[in-house]
Each structure stands twice: as C-alpha cells, then as structure tokens.
Length: 241
Image 1 (tube, rainbow, N blue to C red):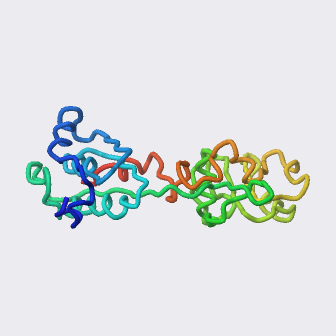
Image 2 (image 1 turned 60 degrees about the horizontal axis):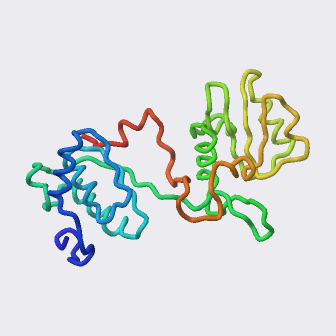
Image 3 (image 1 turned 45 degrees about the vertical axis):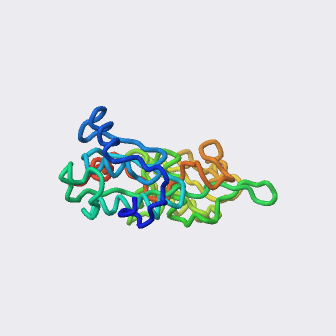
C-alpha cells in the first residue's frame, strides 16, 4: 500500500490483488459487472478494471476521495505498477463516472411542514423530481415548460415559484390539444388545478413524500448528477476501450 497511497498504515489488512484476480478469474469473464458495496481501499475495482470487467464501487467514507478515487485514477492513467498490473499486461485506459448521494430532497421545517431542501438549485430539483416521477430530464430550448419528457406527448415542468392563472394560461396557449402536462410547483392559486383536463398541478413536497426519504443526509436515492438513461449506458457504465 505504501507505493499506492504513500502511507503503509492507510489500511491495516488490504486484500492482495492476486487473491482478487483469482476470484474474478474463477467466477467472471471479461465484460461482466462487478459490484463492491464496501470499497475500502479500492482493490476490487482496480483489479476488475485491469481484467476488463465492468464495475460499480460504493463507499461512504472520506477515503472514497483520498484513496479509492486516487487509486483507480492511477490504474486508468497507467501509473499503477502494483499487484497484477504486470501479469495482466495492463498499460492503462478506460474511464468511469463518479456519483455522490445528495442531501435529502424533502425536509421538515420548524413547524413540521414538508419543504424542499435549500441545497437543491432549480436544475438539480427538476432532474430529481423527473427521476422520481419516471420522466426523462431534457429541457427544451423552445418551450420552458417542456422540461422533462414522459412519452412523445406527455411532459413534466418543475418550478419553485408560486403558480398563478396568468402563468398557467401562458403555458396552456402553447400546449397542444393532444399533449399532457404535469406541473410540479412550490404552491399554486386555489382552484388552479381544476382548470384544464390535460394539465395536472401538484405541490412538489406532496408528490414526493411517498417516493423519497426526508430529513436524512445519507442512504437515500437522490443523486447529484444528471441521470444516465439506457441509450448512454453502454458508453458510460463500462470500460472505454
């Protein structure tokens, strides 16, 4: 470990790469997906990468940044001469995406009311709500309310502003008769949600309470990163060869 991290006591009992490579050799083949949900020093994903396996690594400690990321970066850059590097004839290459769990999307204020976490900017909030509601976040350049797409004719618009009849009528004038829109907002005028059959209006906290955790800062499913969808997965989830 000294040559990798510069501190021989960084991890007291690191697993040898030769052991992990033997296990992967017996149980997997190139292209398989390896999951290590307790990443530790990053040995498993480092070996998996050198053996041309896809991988997912999960770690909640600060060493995710100071050790795991540093180690896999060296593997990718071809600067890791340790373990099975020579055996696998590893010269570097590939890539990965780094995700962080976000703070809770919904919190309770001092009065016990459910409110949107202030840590979320408008884009993060819109992407998170879209993910929870099963929409694809892809803002239109022409129409601001076509923020996320469900099907060819259904859309989701998320705003932290109070919605009035003036705002709604502007949207309604651009909404096709065969199009359907869900508006998720902080609040709205009384009765506004009953004006149009093809527009549903909901308050953000209420529509998410049954779908995400709140009042916690870990172990939730809110991810600080634009969501990756199926058409991108083959390019982003594995080795880039």
